Image (cartoon, rainbow, N blue to C red; front, side, top):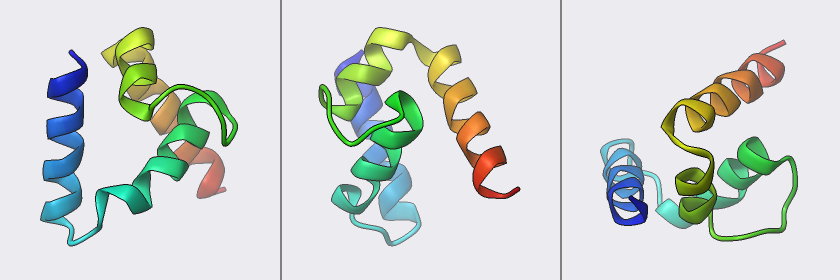
Length: 65
């Protein structure tokens, strides 16, 4: 759910001493390929866990190339 995704996102950010807001734009770009659209957590909920993970992995592969 949206709430679970947001909670997990905030916990991961806190564990790495990063402000959640600093990660939202990079996450949006990884998930939809652009700066605009619904809230990051709504996008992740709409596309589902597996697709969210696949898109993040794909973006990280591209960034690390």
